[in-house]
Length: 136
Image 1: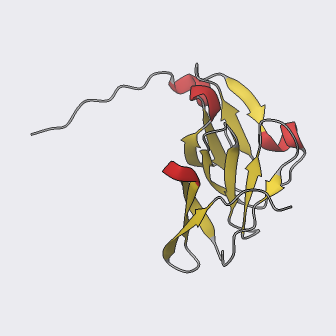
Image 2 (image 1 turned 120 degrees about the vertical axis):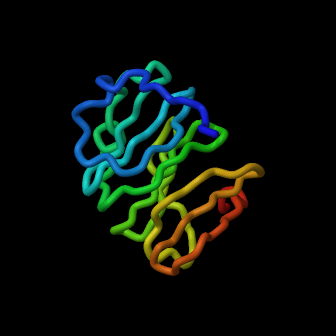
């Protein structure tokens, strides 16, 4: 038995990417695409280009990998080359998250109850982090 059939919605709307690698949900029904050794491109819910995180925030990526968005609409990006994860809030500058023990973060997902799941290829494991709030 075959599964459901999928049909492309708008293949021409995402042309011009430079080595797209990872795709994740973005805020407001859109999505984000990381580009190999480049930037992270944002698209709206109608698949329209919204710009790049690097241009919009002035952030320089090493090698952006996994992308996801949290319940507040912030975008979170794993940077494989810099061994870090950065949060891009809707308002304000990017924030390097204090995640201990990351060697080569690749894939990511925001889980319920404020958890961040990170696939760390450097340790060959999945790491789970819990948001504890801002430090005073």
